[in-house]
Image 1: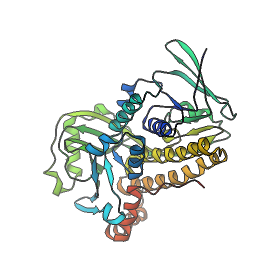
Image 2: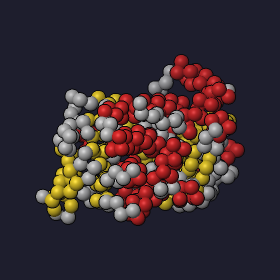
Image 3: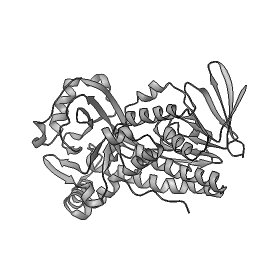
Amino acid sequence: MKIKKTQVAIIGAGPSGLLLGLLLNKQGIDNVVLERVTGDYVLGRIRAGVLEQGFAKLVREAGAAHNMDTKGEVHDAVEFAFNDTRIEIELTKLTGESVIVYGQVDITRDMMEERAKQGLETIYEASNVQPHDVKSDNPYITYEKDGEQFKLECDYIAGCDGFHGVSRQTIPDDVKTEYEKVYPFGWLGLMSDTKPINPHLIYAKTDRGFALASMRSQTRSRYYIQVPVTDKIEDWSDEKFWEEFKKRMPESARDKLITGPSIEKSIVPTRSFICEPLQYGNMFLVGDAGHIVPPTGAKGLNLAASDVATLYKIFTRVYKEGDKKCIEQYSPIALRRIWNGVRFSWWLTDLLHNFDDTKDEFDKKMETSEIEYFLKSEAGRKIIAEQYVGLPYEDLK
């Protein structure tokens, strides 16, 4: 078995793992990233595209922001539509902040390229990755690559390997508590090289179900509709999707819809999931390894970024100041922001989707009242705007 050494071992070469690695390198903290699949496979995952300013600032600090800042689109507003009533939430006017529309695939590619340019080690197609002795002062990871076995000795392990990864599974069942809420519908998404229907995103609630008009650029659109959880991709031709999507857009926007062949189509399940704690010994769960949110509030990638921000601060203090006690702050700080983001996504999901017969008349009256308050009063719109652009990151004590 070949032995390698690093200070921080990062499992997972998605955006959270790559971002953490680049930030640590800025502080002179050695790190190695292990990924079980190829880089191309990682880039094949079509995900989020709305970035909070906190995430954008981290990417700039990491030195991988050139494309984001030159090709990404700054959005200072977002729209909500209830059948044919459209309400604009003026993000910048209400909060002083905006969001950036830039695809997760693009930001991941940018960080991959920056990591390669800096000569940092990323090991793709590492199989049988397994953390060991994570509660000791000498944790390590074993893995296989090209038929050889390796042992990666480290000080700390960052589990950025997603919901199905090995990191969370390493925490014993009697130590962790997992919370989950599964929704009875999914999001059918279609991407096309067409001009977006609207300058800003439109979140639409209709009698036919939810729809979202999003984008990646002024020439690439990303659209979603709520579908039963039992639906399959094969059930939906491009023509059928466009027909249904158009019906769910407000009437004043329908004539602006430009259709075209899909370049990607997928169904995203909707659920909330949180694991507590996010730390076990010297191993830390980051991003989807520790929490999942419905895509409604655009919080999944952004919550992963806030995890990274907290862990980055902790590792910097550990290695610069020798303060190892601060690692105990990771889980409490991260979870406070996670639960807030999960609550916002849960609330928006509940407000904007159709739940068939699961809501009684009382629930429907409450829903109408919430729409009246939160979207038709400035105070209500400000609450939504503050959550949408992202709350400030919490500092260490």
